[in-house]
Image (cartoon, rainbow, N blue to C red; front, side):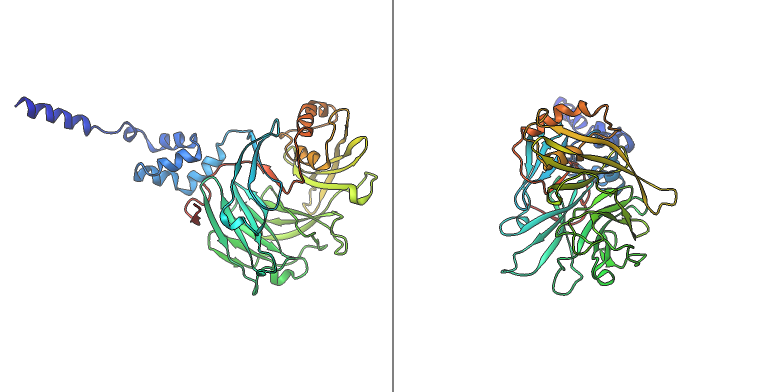
Length: 387
């Protein structure tokens, strides 16, 4: 009789309700948003309820929204092939690296075309002596998911086609954009991850004036639009004079003039790049000489009509070698792209001397891609596993 009672008590203990079962789903969701992505992936296998919470699209968006700010690392590609480095934003030292999937390695030349919510749009090109084929792939390194984007051009992608990738906050859909200045009507389309189809943009009218690009033009995302720096002269695509803009909601193209270049330097020594500074578009014009690096930073705000940008000079950049010896133009670009959000002026430029000195000590090659590192669950229910 005693044995029967003891067994009964043991069964009662083992069948007790899990404490988590008593928690409301809203609280469980809040707890999950604080976990690293790897921990959330493990939690999916615990029970159906947890899996349902983590794989819901609303949770993916909530997790992105509640990530700690500011992010302490950025993702960088220094070569066309191989791994992507994760570096600290304060010291610029490498702390980790992302090994790209096999499809991005070996003889394949890979370019990072865009980085949105932790997902890379990567464009792979196989050398011509093997095949003319090329691929566009979305890859989320946090969850090891990859999604191939089909080609709609017979015979493969035209080298003149450029790509963009963004999240339409109005329709809440991720979209890939192909654009070609030369053959706009046949080569410019929009691919939505929601319907998995290449479709014509809602407004097929090309931008005026037309904007042409160099061999590889990396886009920038800001305020529900994609921006490419280009030129209105097809014969000189290195002289960046305009932005080509694509509104992700309206699916319409416009072009906006950049500020005139003021610095006096030979064209081959001049560098122009864009970033988001103080919640606005910004442009850096930079050139180097034996004394150091010099240039100007501009901020653009849309006019009341919304048809163009009004540019105002924020400050002049004069970084002498006494402050940061060995600072190249590409290191200045890296610093400019990672300035903490907020107003930067002549008065507080000196507050960034330590960052510039730290950057000057880094052994560096030309930057192919640079953006803040983000972990996300985007593509969790789409694509194929990458082993």
